[in-house]
Each structure stands twice: as structure tokens, then as C-alpha cells.
Image 1: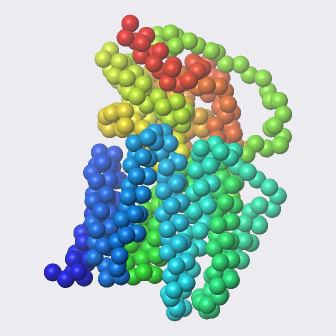
Image 2 (image 1 turned 90 degrees about the vertical axis):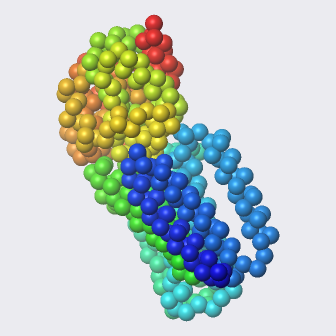
Image 3 (image 1 turned 180 degrees about the vertical axis):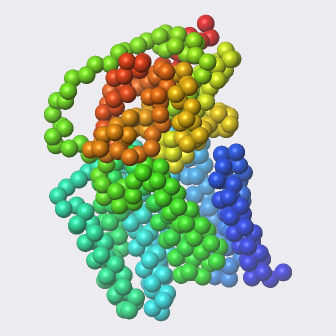
Length: 456
């Protein structure tokens, strides 16, 4: 069997596995199988590339394999699940960086036709803005830079002007593929666009940003496939780009927002008139003992996880609490908002790690009608996704966003560190409701205390 036939056979098998993996990822029950399909497909694609006729030495390939395996293994072993959004942002950055470097090397050593220059320009432009955009997303998620939107005068106009100018460079390069200076200038402009694109986006919109950057990285990879004539890279990049784009649309719809509002709206910035002291309101502070009493007398409990649960790494304590409640004959379910956390499916990933059964995880449209008949809604670190202001407060950045109807439950227990607003910067009226029991403290510590009290 010739090398070319082996290569094409492995690429075909890899492409089929990528498609099957993506399909399986559409359901939590089959997601693990989907990841295994995709991983096997990637292994076949890498092995197949070793049969490519352009490979004349394996020294750098082996070195890259060893270094990459060590880094990937360390990330898999030591990085906590709560840092998964940051890890995904970094993966986008490095994948896009690889695309940019391939484009630069190809530009240095080949003469391009106009059509091929379009592919190279697209590859390096979208790759460059994905690199810095992903690093900025990582920095916001890791709180290395402020999470709320960073705004300045004429920001949107200047960003759009820079993007149009960069597109003009791209178009000129298609007609004049030999301009080194303009090629480098376009890459630098793309890097700047990535930073400026994420600066005005707040933490509340990070799920959309993460999926959009995923789309950009996929498109850059697909363009790389055209440049180096690699069919499996074209297929994988197209699947990645399309799925990331459609996921971004679904995330925007879940928040009842448009792409333009996400990218340019500055949701989460605190208006100047609101920076002073506001109206003084009081909440009723309760103890873990009070919360246990309310749950023990309930027949149904709906648990609403949020970013606070992720930060406290409290998913295992949540699972233990649900087990203790179920042993008392109490119906327990989990209400999952599509944009809870900092990436699509963030809460699903954390709860799956804690071995919470998939059939207990209900999406918003499947659980909201049950809240009026629910005895206790237990909110763990969630804020914007249960804020009633989204229904009635027209000047709120959350207005129109579908929320979980926790406020319609008979009793609401909220575990939070403080009364600090969520990433949208909107105070939550639910905190001040008479039927709301505010239990302050670290979510993990509080949940462990609740479990201990239930066991007694």
C-alpha cells in the first residue's frame, strides 16, 4: 500500500470520527463518547500526516510531540475543572498562533496566486485577532484585568475604523501578494483588533466570546488547510468554525441579545450616575441551620448553580447535598441556564465531574414552569441568570434576557459571599424579597455545613 493511499485513508477515517464526535457532543449523555471519537480522529490525522511526502525529518516532529504531550498532560492533571474556561481560551490562542506561524512561513517561501493569497491573508488575519482576543478573554476570566467592560470615548467607531482599514490591507494584498510590509502590518493590526474587541465585553458575555473565538480559530485552521493543501485540516476547521458560530448564535438567543449588542454593548459597565451611594436596602441574613430546616420540610428542591459554585469548587459538595436530600424522599433537580458560568456548558461540565446524574440536569425551558410548584429554590453563586430585573426593568442591561424563574418558588435560599452584583452590574431585587433566605459565606464551606447538619 502506497504512502499516499495510507494518508488518504487515515484522513478519511479522521474526518468521519470528527463528524461523529461533534454529533455526540450535542447531548450530555453521549458527550464523553463524542470526545473519545474526536480524540481518536485527531490521533489518526496526526499519524496520517507522518506519511505526507513533504515530511523529510522526524526530529522536530518528535520534539514537538514530547513537549506538547508534557504540557497537555500537566494541564489535564493539575488544572482544576473550575479553570476550564481559561484553558479553552488558551487552546484557542495557541491553535490560532499555529495558523499565523504557518501563514508567515508559507508567505516567506512561496509565490502565491491571487486566490491563494486570499486564503493566506484570511488565515493570518483571523488567526492574529484570535490569538490576542483569546489571551484577553483568559486575562478577564482569570481576573488579571478587570472583568467588567473597559470603555472609552469613540471606542466602537475607532474599532470599526481599524477593522475596515485592516480589510483594505487584506484586499490590497490579494492584488499585490509581494508586499511584505503590508503583510506584517496586517498581522499587527489583527493582533490589535483582538485586544480591542474583547476589552468592551464583560464577564456576563464570556460564553458568547469563548464560542465566537472558537469559530474564528476554526476558520483560521480551515484557511490553513487550503494553504498547505491538507484536506482533513479543511474539514476539521470548517466543522469547528461552523459549530462555534452556531453556538454563539444560540448563546446570544439565550440572552435575548444580538451579536452587535454583545460585541459593542458594553454590558456590565457601571454608569457614572450609579457610582455613588444608592438606596439603602436590607436583607434578612439566615444561618445554615435555618436553611436546613427549610429544605427538610420541603418535598421538592431545585438547585441553581452559577459561577460562584465554580469559583468555590463546590460541585462535589452540591452533589453530596443532593444525595442527602434524596435519601429523605425529597425530589431534587438542577436548573441549568445556558449562559451560567463563563463558557457554554460550564455548569454541566462541573456537575458531570461530580457524578451528578444527567437526568437531574434540566435546561431552562424544561424547568421554568415547575418553579411555582417548587418548595425551595437553592441558588448557589448565580446572580444575573435569576435576576427579576430582566423582566421589568427596561433600563437594565439584562432586560429581555430569559432567566430562571427562581423567584416564583415558595422559598428561595441564596448562597453568596456578599451582595455584590453579577457581571452585568445590576443589583438583584431577589435578594430583598421576604421569602428569600440569604446565607452568606464561601459556597463550599456552607454546603459542607448543610450536609453535616442533614447527616445529624
